[in-house]
Image (cartoon, rainbow, N blue to C red; front, side, top):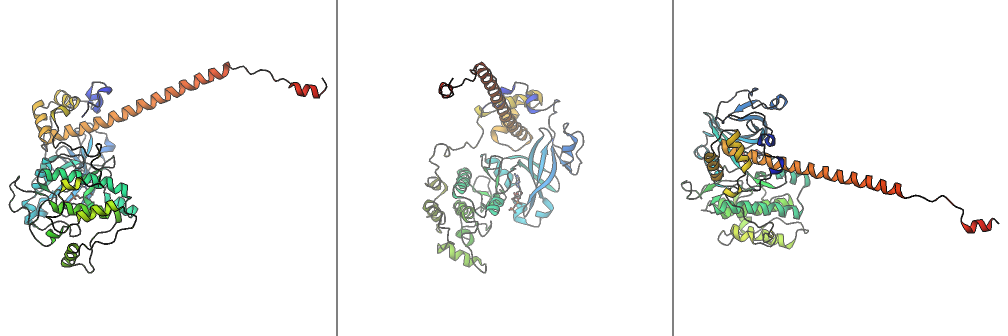
Length: 428
Ligand code: ATP
């Protein structure tokens, strides 16, 4: 990562818009505390949008809701940046022994992964009744909304999103993590219209976290589930490859690839093993159809793994600009030293502790501060550069106009004379 803010001067307080020295964060897990004027000097009209305070986060509007969790927009009081806070109601999940047993797994697995197309987990908080996962906010909404609005995506657009999804899944599979719930609803969009994979509630990781019997639990949405999952066989990472196929099909058509009327799991399974996919619009390229057929291979042993999928010609991941692999951890050379200096000198954090949290991707308050300040700095630097560029452009155009005016004024127009031929015809 480049030191993007160096052109904005060296006073980090000026860069991050912080007036006073911020104290070392303490994790106050109190619930239902109404945000007060102590929220790092944030303006009152902003605070009005938030009704509750949990630790260093003010809780605002609801962003979405799943089976076991509600997700709220949060405001990180230390940096003034927005986040998403997933709140799992421990009382509610107690009724479901599988979910309550694996409640902490989502956060543990998400900390193992760092990727631009996967939502970054920032912090984990816990109270007696709730479990909070603080994540980066995806302000672009759900990809499903886009598909619903347009009925289906243009092939080029679908290609971009599928490519990003494949890259995200490759990172998971490299770490032995199977997502098991890949679906359009779990693909959100960021400010740059790139996908962010969410919801690691059903994912699992063989061997690494020591969970027993990881690959036989039946889970996920039937429309996206691979045939081996539906038929309750032992399965592996390739169930995600099948689900990528379903997501790609929905992007291109707006409908599911395998359906049965009336619905039955046996009927659905039969259509899958018969390779009886619903028809595709004739405008879809043969390269896309070819990839779908590869992804919908009913025999998991014959189905390509994610690395083989990456070599498919439709994805064009051989392109040096799109095929660059991402490191799973921030490397020490990538550390933003302006942010690090600000955190140690102005905020009182220990340098070794900040570095340890950032380099190991440990969800905690220090990682949150680093991640949000780094993003804030990148955003403000971009705005600053754009402003400089526009000012420069304006100055140049003004200079051009004054020089042009001077040039025009210099040109003397000769007085109007009667042409010779006219003078002759008039007998002069
Ligand atoms: P499910 O029942 O599918 O397992 P869940 O209870 O695990 O869902 P999520 O799927 O993680 O919950 O989130 C529910 C909704 O909250 C999402 O569909 C999305 O609209 C919203 N949401 C989740 N994470 C974010 C985020 N990082 N930024 C913005 N909105 C989010």
